[in-house]
Length: 272
Image 1 (cartoon, rainbow, N blue to C red):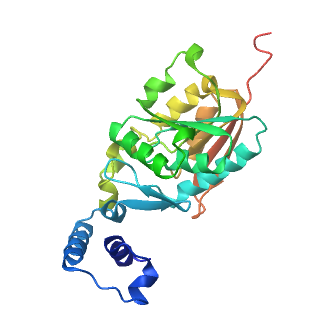
Image 2 (image 1 turned 60 degrees about the horizontal axis):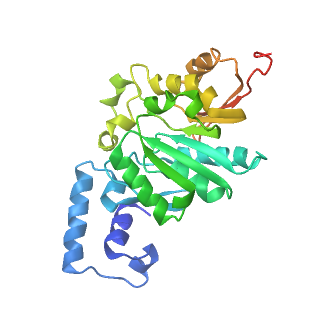
Image 3 (image 1 turned 30 degrees about the horizontal axis):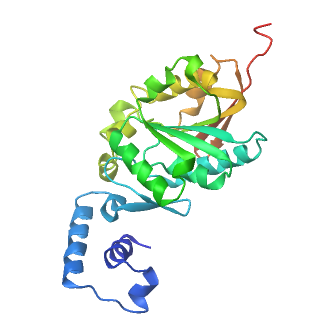
């Protein structure tokens, strides 16, 4: 559907085909609502905020100005993660989603992996409320726990307090701070806290990679969505941590380096 069709079907609570086959007409109230939507879009507000939802892997998710709008590229990250999890023989599986936002990653995994539980962290209380709502609407609230917490505080937990995970997955902020102001107008409307990755865009990755070992079970996976031209720098970060012996980069729909998968293989001889 084009943007006007998405707004019309939202206002009229109908399918796209109904606009043309049944030739539904708007009531005066709906006409005013549609006019307001058009004005908001003309002012640069993202369409998904205007209609109040987005689609992610065939799942309808509520979104508002407190959460980053899920991107199609992130669907590939989830599909790769699900493939890895299905190949893991341990059950039940434990997954940690860092920076959950709308809950799209956590919910998509919970819907696709039968025996699993996903802990999902976000610094924004409003985002956690959105994610919990989405989990309930998609009937995975018993398979997900949404935690309002600063990611770095969570990563700083004492090892004795951690029950290890089979996978850590994250699409963290990765835009360099100086580049945020130059993003398109509609992207500027999204939470900057979900975009700004520090001076070089790598601040969150460094924290995640440094702490991942104490959160992962042996042979567990770290799955990351990354920015363009960040793969070489992140591989260099991983070289500081020898327990991540297998680090692979995967490309997105545009053939750009977009995802990084690393397997945690601790040196069991170190303590012998």
